Image (cartoon, rainbow, N blue to C red):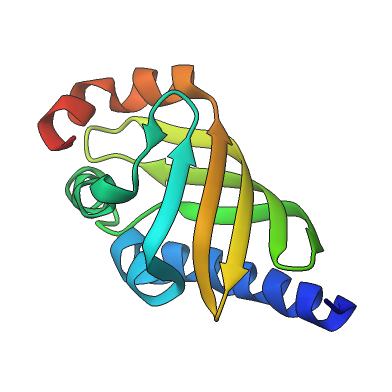
Length: 137
């Protein structure tokens, strides 16, 4: 595969992260993520069947009612894979600040994300979202 494809896939991930920031997690996943995605997260395993519940949790708990502001710090790609270091920031309705750092490995096929491996600080998630997780997931 060409370097042009790798660069196009990097832009695709930039657009995905921008969509999370501007339109929210639900809208971004509907637009950019395959319905057959396999999405694995540190400490949780595969979560693809929980994406709607996660979106609802963000909508009900974040001050902006959408999703985190996702800032790409670094990115590298090869063929159909994109690795991205990302900061996710948001203020919850209870005043808590969520400020986590992620490493994602995305696999893109036919203009959709088909596989995600997501690494993050699970202790921070528990500290900020622990009381909400049981309600939504």
